[in-house]
Length: 30
Image (cartoon, rainbow, N blue to C red; front, side, top):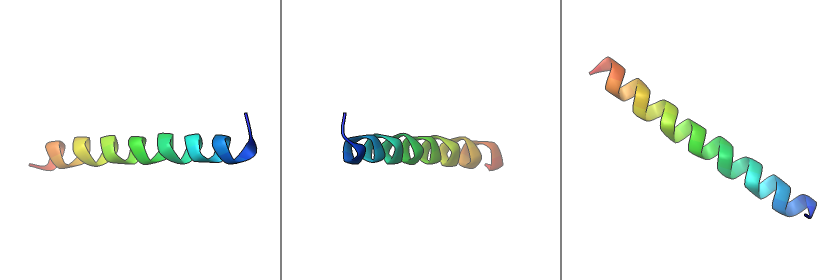
């Protein structure tokens, strides 16, 4: 596992968590 792959995977997880958080937020406000 290279540092670049690790950084890419971390960014992917963070991006996915943000997308899920936005979905829950929008669903809660509506």
